[in-house]
Length: 393
Image (tube, rainbow, N blue to C red; front, side, top):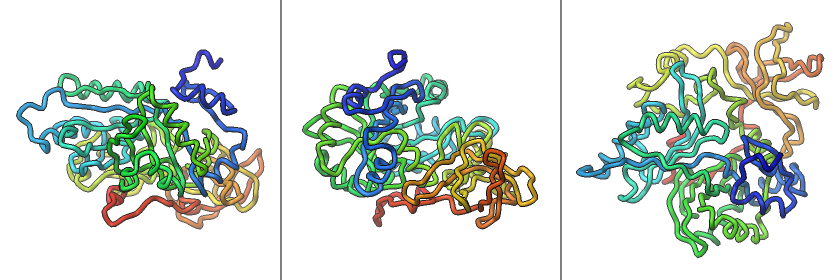
């Protein structure tokens, strides 16, 4: 089966290291290593875990012609192209800044969630760095190519390697590869020269921890990855722990907590739509989304605290205390950090207040639970006076 799947530049390395390889989004990926998911999860929370996320869709979009344009004009021109389908303020990005955003359909549903960033140097103005999800990247790139046709070119980089170095010791590790990358603010990126080749490094991630995502040319991928793995604070981490880490952090997984019927407001992502975009109301689904901001959506994403240890997986029906169906679990699993089951899901808005008593229908039995704050484990993102946390508000 693995011969029919796409591989990353690191697939052979993971197999050699004992990775248990499984199909994910059409790729042959490691779900865990010999230590197992729980140990990998806890290692990342305490040290630094290294993940292969090369199945994602990194790309650079650049204007075809910048003749006669100032740096700011070039940036605004390409930003306006992408603002046709993304509801975030791209024109207002600072140099080197990244924003988390959503790609929307005409009904305001989420086609995908992604990162988009503005380069730092003068040369990079008129270009944007984009990273989309693996499962929907073909549709995403089709949309991006359509809106930019004749004006800009989207160059895919997904045949190369993208790795994520995550955890409280990640900053000390990144210094050994690219010392200046340790000065990046949260949600910012830049290009760096290293002794093992040039890389693009962003201070971001999908675990709730401080960390970095490193884009590497395919020919340098194994050397750089092996260099990082030689550090005593780094271990390879599979997709299993990546999922439990993001769930503890209250982060959405596309295809589960987000899909084309769910709006950013229902998902608790109103902060991704900046004030200027709300005022302009010029993005897909704006009428629905602005109405939901003003009048509240009919459903909301919630965190779920279990009152016993019976786990509830995706698809579990959520009921109120009277036994009426009010929603569904979209992500559920065991929290290695808390040693309890946790879950997220959607319920009718009237039942979304923190502390509301609910019931989960687990294998035909009603289990008591309650609505809780979305972040099960506090985020440990890097903070500084000059960082870009304002982009998260």
